[in-house]
Image 1 (cartoon, rainbow, N blue to C red):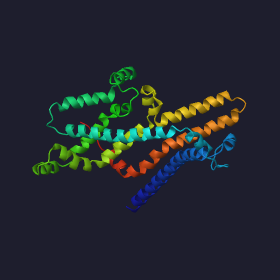
Image 2 (image 1 turned 90 degrees about the vertical axis):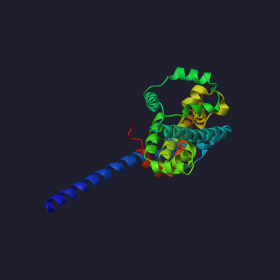
Image 3 (image 1 turned 120 degrees about the vertical axis):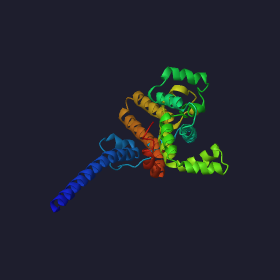
Image 4 (image 1 turned 135 degrees about the vertical axis):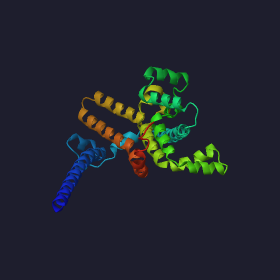
Amino acid sequence: MNRKAVKQDLDSRIFDTVNVTVLILFTILIVIPLWNVIVSSFSSGRSLAEGGFVFWPKEFSLENYQAVFRDDTIWQSFLISVLKTVIGVVTHVFFCAMIGYGLSKSNVRGRKLYVTMGVITMFFSGGMIPTYLLIKSLGLLNSFWVYIIPALFSYYDVVILMNFFRNVPDSLEESAKIDGAGDWRVFLKIFIPLSMPAMATIALFNGVNQWNDFMTTKLYITDQYLYPLQMKLYEIIVQSQTQSMQNVAGSVVIETTTKGVQLATIVITTLPIVVIYPLLQRYFISGMMLGAVKE
């Protein structure tokens, strides 16, 4: 028994050592490039021209961020990004929750048909050209609502919420209905508060998609007033690269300035998500495994 216990203890120590070593290596591989991007974004063009890995800026400078925020319309684009992310997340989560609540009831007529139709949408899409024609026929071109309405529904998120709602005890719903509560009140007062872990997880994923969405603007928006932050920063990078191609004599300086602007845009676009993620982290792990069992 002693030998067996010693062997198990040794195996456990070896596993822990290997596990910790691998995690440390992965952490280093992730942190070092991020640190280099952040530090380089605060470096001057002269220090970036030297090349190599930048652990700490030799010449601290805000010129890269000043180049990004020099455009007065950047704040309008930032507002559009915030509005489309907030409105898109709230409407998406609430819409999917309503459908998931209805499909979680076994007595709904045509439930199997609706579930089958939803599963089909997970594997097949209409394609880019038919989707564009649909958006055009709905009058959503150059409209703010093109960011919201097409992103309202995701059957994958419906499945997660549907399976979560099934785990809610029927006694809670029955007790509420005995007290005179209708379906809407049961949904808003009982199911919504109890499903916060699942809804927070869905909100996090959908919020990241909304914030980083670039193709929707590229395909359906030509009005610069409706450009989100990602599209505006893309224009800034393109303009910087165009200047570097036109200025052959000072190509080294212009190229390093363009690189600094690109690094600054990376930091600006990722910072909001990095700030928000820790606030939802406690819901994230508990909500990740929800909906793993499908029909």
